[in-house]
Length: 341
Image (cartoon, rainbow, N blue to C red; front, side):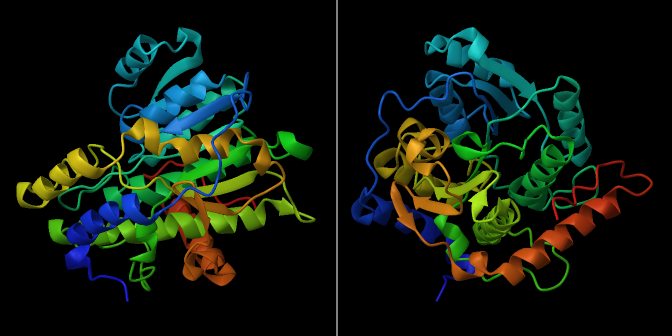
């Protein structure tokens, strides 16, 4: 039985500690020549933590990285260059993923510039202390941790920035940074998908698991919709990087944050180690022609059966598209985000 939402902070610490002890590597490291020279990668939440490490390591393997973040993407580029990344391999992109209009603006700008994305890493997530409202009147955590990814992917597909007309091993790849916490979730909300959400700090990590379940369910539905005659037109992958030292819990109250901070310092991975499965999904030749693969660190697993359920995926997709359409009405002014069918 999944832990109750009230026990999620303790569960997060214990799970992180157990990860270090029981999750054993099954997949070998990437070879030095497994590179993506000349490919374009877009990384959300790229200015800090796992997103920053991913941006740097993709650039080191030859990609031109669009480092997308709400906070200080220019500063993140300077830090990447100070670590030896060639300046022309990191392009800072300022975007507020809590604002659906900003997502639409980003996609329109990429389309205008005729950018084609080869690797899309959906990494952005937040753990807020209270329920906050976005410019479109939605819950911020719901939008950043789930709906922004749905909106971004579907809009990129609609305008062709994320192309699905390639064949063979050169198809683009979409990588979802999910979490083992998707297994903790009590399930997708049976009523309104977009809220209201209990904003109690003690329940926020429970909601984090719920949104990771949504994200993983969306990923597997996307993989189904982007496969044709058994072959992926775009490879879709998801992962849990394992417990790592990041600032994602910085908004939690001190009483909840303190034990997490101690555990992070003593036992959790550095983001430059935790990003290994992300880089594997982006670069490994062993994944050519594959889709719907999930890694917990560097060990392959099945996702929770709820995330793999086609009917759950269909319903989640349809409801998410309805929410975007609703916000496109007068006063909303965002894209529909309802394809591909």
